[in-house]
Each structure stands twice: as structure tokens, then as C-alpha cells.
Length: 299
Image (tube, rainbow, N blue to C red; front, top):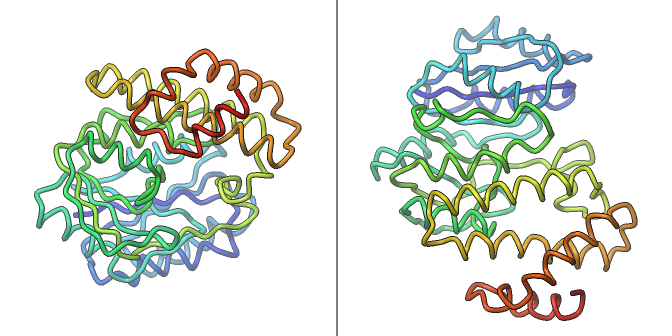
């Protein structure tokens, strides 16, 4: 019924915890595809040892590639009607799969979303794709990451993770939600993102780790997102532009407040963009009071 996909790379100290959290699931009808992305440590061998004990685990060893290419390998191998992802440094609660498949079945949904350790709300929402996208962009209930989501396999059949860059979630999650007819969300804690210095998204909680390469990738992905969603949902084009500008002003404020010196080129480009569209941004109905203050101060 469910394909659980996990990419692992040099996580020998953490990967067993992730694997055991899936093997402990109360919902048993799943396959567990572990893609060893060219690990130089024991991560792949640890996965092999678990596979020898449980026939539901399939380990695929491949040469080193980026996260997106590894996840595509997992998607290509998936046989389940539904797909979810887990990261090799995280863990899931024992009823993670049971909870998500229940949300889908009870609400005739294409996508189900649960809460994570940093975003827990005992709140349930049944959303249209536009509503789910707007909630995604507010980043209060759930984030761009593929873990915490369960979705029908058909939704991903025409989607591929980008095979360049680092942050594949931001380039694909909005397309997944846009293709759904109904999205079911219940924000109870069923998954934990483990934040640590080696985590790819560590900069989102420690902005001093922001690099110009990361910022360039995010800015490019958000511009592509704005254009794609404006074509798909043109009646919401102003909303999609607002969220792109909102990200920019938040980065401008952080770079200035934290004295991040390596992103000066990106800083000046964002300030020019915001200054050129200052009146439009200030007129957005979604704009927050502190954003108004920041754009006046910095742009």
C-alpha cells in the first residue's frame, strides 16, 4: 500500500534510529526503499543488515549524486499506491503511517500532512490545492519538506526532483500540492526533524550559516515558483508574488541584522527588486506590519 523512501549518505551514527522508527510502525503494509547515495561510511552496510532481517526493506546502492537524483531513484523503484519520505537523520512516531493513510481514506484526499516536532497543532483542515499552497507558504503549519506528507503515487508520476542543487523540496512541493484535488492536514506530532550542524536545512534555524549559494538557489526556486503558480492559478498571481517578496525582505533584514558579509551581491539584488515593487508590495493584503517597517527601513 505505502512506499517509504529514504535516502542515506554518511549517517552511520543516525540511520539505524530512522530505520527502526519505520520498522516499528503500527501500519504494516509498506515497503521501505533505502537509497544508499554513495556513502563512504557504514550507512549502506547498516541498511543491508536490516534488509537481511526484514523482507519489506529494499536497499539500492548507487554512486554519489545529489539529493534529488537519489530520491528519483527511490521513486522509480516504488511499487506502493502511496508514497512518503523520511530523512535518514529524523524519526517517525509509531503511528506515523497509520495516521497519514487514515487521513487520506477518511477524507478522500490525495495528500495527507501531519505535524512535526517544531510545528504541532491539534487542528484539522481539509483544503483545496490553492488553500494548501497558501498554508505552505506561510510555513506556520507545515513546511516545504517531503517528510510529514503522504501522497498518491499518481501525483508524482509526472514530477521529478531536480538533479542539480541541494534544496530539492522547494522546487517540487508546490507542484505536488497543486496537482491534488484535496489535501488533508492534522497537525498532531507524528514526525521529528532532527536539526544539527550537518543538516542541509540547518541554516533555517541558524541564519549565520546562510551562504550565497544557498540564497541563490532559494531565490531562483522562488522566482520559478511564482511564475509557475501564476500560470496555474492566475487569479492568485498577486498572492504568489507577495510570498516571493516576503522571503526577500526577511533575508534582507537577517543579512543586515546578523552582519552576514558573504551575501552582499544577493542583498543588493533583493533590495533593488523590492524597491522597484515597493508600492505593489505595500499594497498586498497579506503584508505583515513588520514587513512594512522593514521595507521602509531597508529599501
